[in-house]
Image (cartoon, rainbow over all chains, first blue to last red; front, side, top):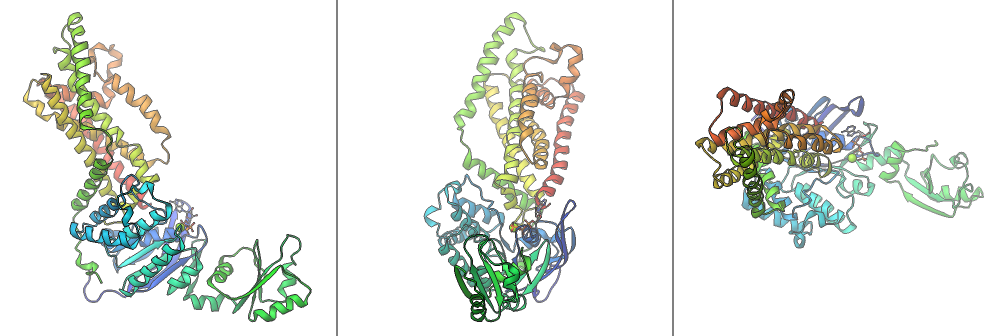
Length: 314
Length: 268
Ligand SMILES: Nc1ncnc2c1ncn2[C@@H]1O[C@H](COP(=O)(O)OP(=O)(O)OP(=O)(O)O)[C@@H](O)[C@H]1O
Ligand SMILES: [Mg+2]
């Protein structure tokens, strides 16, 4: 054992973590600390560097620069030992397509050198959990995309990992399967498992993550609890306006007088305000007649748009 | 909660290698579409048609080939050729597929396995098949009465060596490419000529002098020569050592380059 005493509080600790592919810097010196038992999220637009980061934290991809420890161990020298305690749901499924659902689970158990009896028992339990028991003998090739995703999730749990790394785990899942997974993740968390998640679903991030970071262009642009991020980077309320055909909508500059910030999306315009009803009254008072208008509370989605967004008028 | 991660002492590399070997073996066992009967029937029919049938003609018109009957001459070459094809067939598309399309090697390195373990498991499994095929062929060749020395017992090992000598460099190649475009070219202009012109069907001295060095460049030539010597018990030791060394060198270069490329590919 390289160290003794209590297990470390920091399950993952990264300082200046960098990944370069040739000349391209996909991850630009990020600092991350994930505590034992917490559920930590990575958000960010396509190409932000989330998967590159997850692969480094999975002790697979080698950091180009910076420091990284997982379970307090150095992945460059202790990779096999670290990975023995990890469960990984990669963004893209990596299942053996020509073989059966059951075989895929059992073989993975063998990779972890688990006893056969334990593999059999866990396989049955996990098939039950992802509701694939009746498809246990089907070829993976014959499963639907969502079923394969569920199998990948089950596979990541075969070794009862202490740290579960999920890269867009719910992409392709139907709502029921998604809620089942959330439920399972809560349970794992209660049992002390640490979770690291990326997702493009902001509701999911809000539900699941104790803390999260928003990445853009390889760097962390914000971090905090979902609540903190919303308080820091958005207003209390949002007015969503739809103006129908193009050309009819008012210029952002005109709307800017009613709001702290205006966000023009292809299908709607968002006004960031403290009091939504009041702002809406102002809009109508100015002679504007949106097709529809909705007042709601700010969400992570708004934070995300703000931090990584496209059209932005203050 | 589960027992602590830190209770799980790291296992030696060979234990991970064994798991990777087992993985490849069970995938093969589960997906194999052929039959044992077919695997035995082919060499049997080939030796019947070419060794016995054509052999009659050769004996009638030419007499002995390199001091042997044509059947004795041909049979060990069949073993080496089959070993080569085995090494090739397992190494190009299956490896690129596992790296790029189905990505099962990426799944493997998300477990305690290292890229080197994946490579070792792959190559040792293919070599195992080479040896097993060598056993089957040796028995069949023996049934045809074409074995004349106790050295023939080494034929399965020669089969394994030939398989590895092809598999290792080809796996290394496949681990470094992004598309399978060149694989077909390799088959058409590499494998097929090598199969036909490695002194498998007629001896080296049937070639004009200026072509002989070219034939000798073909890796398969060395496998055929080695197998032939084992079956007959004749052969000059230095030449045999040289043949063996060529094959071993190919395997070694393949493994060395393959380890580097597999690692770069999987952990980028
Ligand atoms: N193996 C690689 N070689 C070269 N470039 C790469 C490689 N992997 C990723 N990249 C680049 O690094 C950047 C970050 O990719 P990454 O997959 O980490 O993004 P992401 O945040 O996971 O995006 P997404 O939401 O689309 O999954 C992208 O520009 C991508 O093209
Ligand atoms: Mg990604």
